Image (cartoon, rainbow, N blue to C red):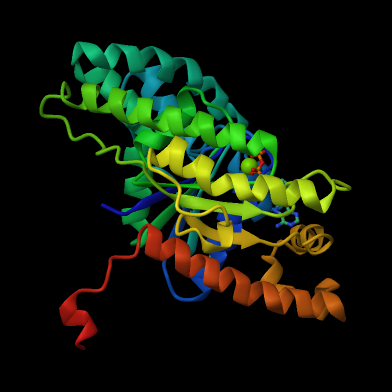
Length: 333
Ligand SMILES: Nc1ncnc2c1ncn2[C@@H]1O[C@H](COP(=O)(O)OP(=O)(O)OP(=O)(O)O)[C@@H](O)[C@H]1O
Ligand SMILES: [Mg+2]
């Protein structure tokens, strides 16, 4: 099975999609085969990856192009789940395409979550559809890791996305809303893990996801604060993040109030300001922006700096999630 890492927080706009996009590009550029899955019905990740003409082609309802198409066929025709379409993006990088039509799956997922308790295979096939598609897509391109982007809700779509996840990374901002988001997520992760383990024990001989959804840590995005807020307020919320995460997500006592010294903090991402829209315009990660894309002078320097920032962040995320720990034999050469 290919490890699946989902970026999730029920607070919106904290940088989930931007992180998945930039980390996936960083892994791909550094030689890791990555599959990204857009499980957000807002389909923002798909819109970052492809221009409008491509998206229109990918959303052609007469073809199987989005992640929803095999699901729709399964649900509407009560057949098996077909193979997903995997869209190439670049060397080492491919995607399962998102679509607003995915929102129509919410009700079906909610209903079948309850029905799994009866132990019949039908509902399990619906609940594990994301997992089946992501794993089939990953096998198709021989991906070493799958990065999943989801929307900010605590609904049935995201619950099924969590069930399909081995690891959960939490992007957040330094504000009251993000702290509330951590508390919600901690409880929701614990509940979902428990509810899935009850259901899983009733799955009979069916192969179902392990549903580990291990909390791998958090990433603070500096852009995700209201502009004009006093620095003091920012620092105050920052100091509350390690404790809230330790308590609400891991159920352990905090060891520090400084995110920079917290083992659960995978990174602090700068506010990239106008580099972000420039990158969206060029359809590139910010660390690939060149003078021809408008990255001149201090922008060029900032783009270069972003490369080393994201390289380090990608490394920390990999160690906390998908990259197998080196064995004694591999260390010894
Ligand atoms: N580090 C950053 N610096 C500057 N702007 C950023 C940064 N990260 C994200 N943004 C911008 O902030 C906005 C929200 O980011 P993004 O879409 O990644 O958040 P999200 O958590 O995926 O949102 P949603 O909850 O709607 O899915 C976008 O316009 C994005 O370009
Ligand atoms: Mg998003």
